[in-house]
Image (cartoon, rainbow, N blue to C red; front, top):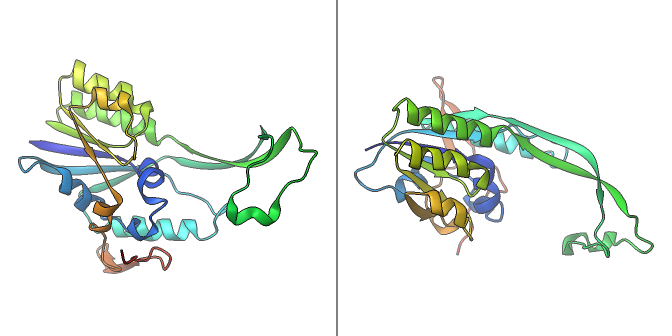
Length: 227
């Protein structure tokens, strides 16, 4: 059964990989194949993400580019890029302010302001691109079965169109601890991705990519942690 997988890169990161840096050097093709049935023929992986900037974390763009280079070593992975925006926005402050333990030295004291300016990070376009391509590919007969890697309910309607109106199966490979019940209701089948499985599907620390044998190197802080 010809299968195309559609990966929501940011959702995969925030739901599964952010708290597990040792799993971030992920061979996404290997992880998807781990959950596929034997009769499924994985012909393409469409990976949706956006280039991040250095305003919050100066090393993040370099780490991300290393990973994108590693993905180039797997020919069936096809990245599609949206836009990543970092803006300064005014937002209401929770009273009393809640401070993360690592920021405990920067405690606010009363009287608390009603509004504060914060960095607001937004990823634009990936979910729209994924949903449009999923429906388009289904109508054009490019797959017999689709896989979506996400837990984003914005993709509920594209899933419904493909499963109900076009009558093609869509599997939900969810990276979330608590998968969306709405997404599960529209999925033809569900697989739950886990950090343990992601750790089994890592690229080598050095990966050759491109025609000239360039090398992508695993970032130092994406280390392998011994259980």
